Image 1 (cartoon, helix red, strand yellow):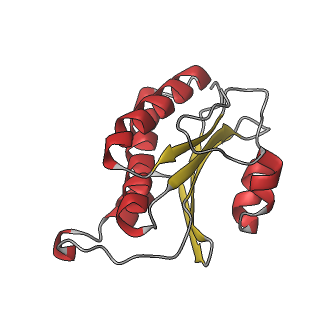
Image 2 (spheres, rainbow, N blue to C red):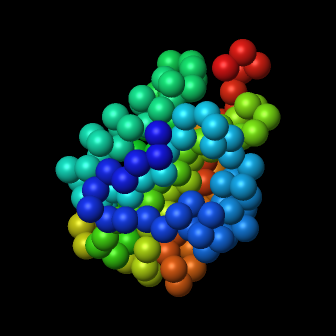
Image 3 (cartoon, rainbow, N blue to C red):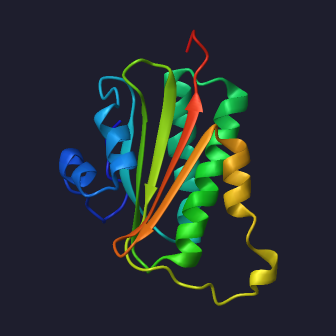
Length: 161
């Protein structure tokens, strides 16, 4: 299910992966692209979160991800995209989701562009997102650099998925 959701276009997947931090590029390299997968650009706007939820739910369902893990996956990725909306420069967020070649895990990459921005709203209510993502995913990796922030989330699959 490789698709471009919005007017933002993405480079070919191998080119995009080559620009990612190594830990994220390895996820793309190890992905089973013959199975359902996502590679989309979504505008970093609150109104696009429903689209993200829908795309992820459909993809996870197509892979046979159990409902509880699917809910955790959707919630964690929605939080990562929400953080992009709050902290990144305006633009698009790239979303890649795939099962690994051995069908042992699913990975989701959320990549934004540009430098980190401090939110302008009351930050007292914020700051729990990374902890929440870490609690929902089996593995959470985050990398900030001049090109933006890359988040990789991983969930182990049951042996029959």
